Image 1 (tube, one colour):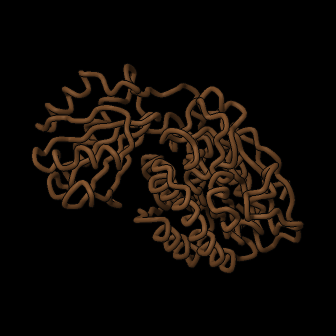
Image 2: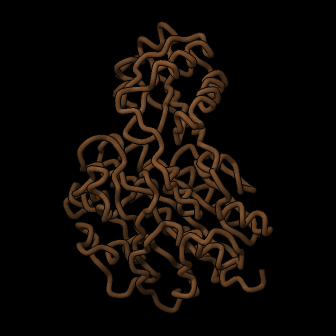
Image 3: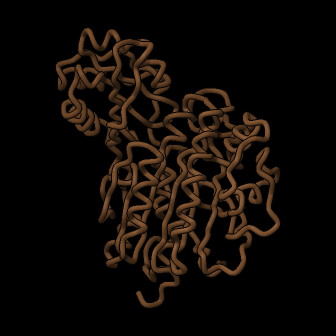
Length: 397
């Protein structure tokens, strides 16, 4: 451990904040997607993210984000990463960052889930399933939520990603019961016939369709990692690992020593601030999901931009609190362009912004050929052997 360059590494994933269509976007019907670009256009030059700007958020793009000019001397290193995993889900992106690309496409259900899965869910829960189609979560809850409150049914739906989502009003189906049903659903789709990335409990509250809101009690039941991740290798080597937000869910608790559940992006940043005050040597891995769940899927570029500006303000505090031997790495797990068609994730390249107060200058990291370079850099820093996927950029800093 004495060879480490940085004592602590803070990795922050801005969930869904893509920076332009990936080279293989055509395979996903995502040509033309550009999350950051379209958010900037929606703000007509008034998107104000000065901390991300000075880190090089526009420098990594061919065309700057509207209203966010490129800077002559970014304070850190900047680049992009592109995904090699078969899908564009959060699980794929995070697993690949930690050295475990998803090589085989998981099952998706454009026509709803098969009758045998639905029948088993109904038999286990003693409740009828309604919905059972790809749909926006807010839309299907507005449509079926009042019926669900009257009957106690389960609203089951999916998206273009490999997910099975179950929505229920918290006053009708208690969280403990909803989670138990989701845990059972997890057992139905672990392969080999059906393999689904995530089962998501989607509790909501409110008196009627005009006032339903999904709560922070969402819980993801993710497919168990199919192999060791960089988090496992770090933990086995005695490196302290912290998971903030849905990191613990995505990795099913594997490789996480200290964990925090986020109620929101701002709550997540509170946890980041808290962990930064702790005396430890290791890796803190954070996911901020509001960009995706609140604004990307709902195709709300104005809300998305406001969330970026809110994050940027909190980023200022993080930059001030970093120690000289700390390293900050900001990235994303996929795109979810609020200015694009549909309501699903978009196959995009993602930003890579890297900074430490000890850096004398900044520079370019180019386009990384896999998200796994992120985790490879963490392993390299702590002199830990692990996955042979990915190339460390530690020596380039």
